[in-house]
Amino acid sequence: VFKFKNNSEVYFVNSGQFGYIQIINDKQRQRMSIHFGLDPTREEFTLGTLKKIFRNKSTNIKNLLMNKNLLSGIGTIYADEICLAARVKPDRSVKFLKQSEVKRIYVAIRKIFKKSILHGGIKGGYNKFICVHDREGKKCLKCKQGIVKKILVSNRRTFFCPICQK
View 1: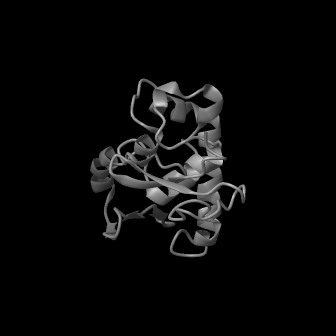
View 2 (view 1 turned 45 degrees about the vertical axis):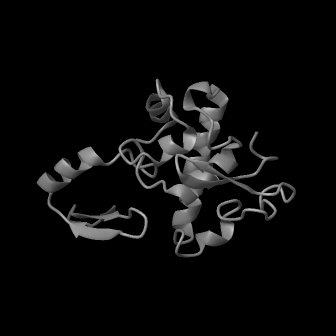
């Protein structure tokens, strides 16, 4: 979301390779925001709100993170890197997460988005910080020991480090 001094906003929606920018008025924004989940870069995104999002869910972590109706802006690359930073396997069920793991996921989301914004996102300079995504068979850049594995999680290529994420 790009905000301007006159309170107008430009939303950038990127579903894979088909992103677009659309200029809308407040009435349209209110209608559209029903379709977007909570923005992890906003102040409203707290550990408490993440716990509420996770509550009573039985899906795996990666699917929940990428569910645009719950959270906005987390694609497959960010989801893999968030799970790595939080030290949880992306295919684990949300319902079996410990509170400490949910907190680590929250901290990882905030940290990764902050760093990504600072470095221009995936298409900018942030790609040099990617530790596991699309690195199958190579060393994990976080621990420098584990060999990155690829699995399918709901038909999505998913990368993880077997040493960092147990």
